Structure formats: C-alpha cells, structure tokens
Amino acid sequence: MVALKLTQIGNSVGIVLPKEVQSRLNVGKGDVLYLTEGPDGFRLTPYAPDFEAQMSVAREIMKRRRNALRELAK
Image 1 (cartoon, one colour):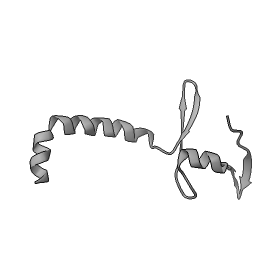
Image 2 (cartoon, rainbow, N blue to C red):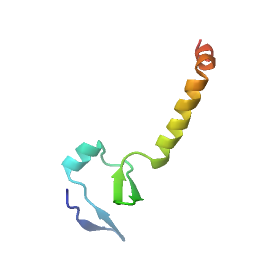
Image 3 (tube, rainbow, N blue to C red):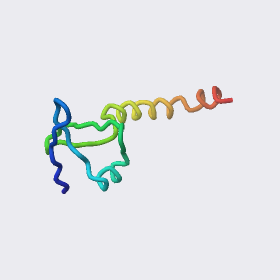
Image 4 (cartoon, rainbow, N blue to C red):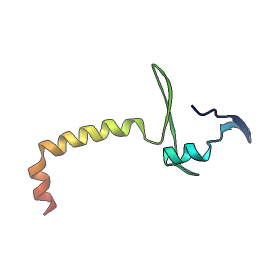
C-alpha cells in the first residue's frame, strides 16, 4: 500500500504519485489515468475501462471473419 497526499494545485486539489508508483503504472507527466469505482473500492489505472470491452468484441469479429481479413490484407 502506498499513501498518497492531497495537495493544492491552483484552484484544484491533486495527488502526487511517487516515482515507484509511476514506474509500476508505466506512466509519466501528461499521461491520463482512470479512476473507476468497484464493489471493493476504487481502482487507478492507465487503461481506459471501455477499451477492453471494445477489444473483446473486435477479437471475436476477427476470429469469425479471419478468412475475409486475410484476403483484404493481400
């Protein structure tokens, strides 16, 4: 567990991520993080929550239409 301190940033409040947290999340200055709420609390992630659902649908379509995609790639 890592404790994060809230700090004043202009008229807003923000958090500062220690370098080891940034490294583990593979993020840096200017990157976007997503805070999602679940039944067991909050989750901070660099991945868009809807992206995995979209990729799952895309994988299924690619699997069903493999031959057509192979022909289009030629």
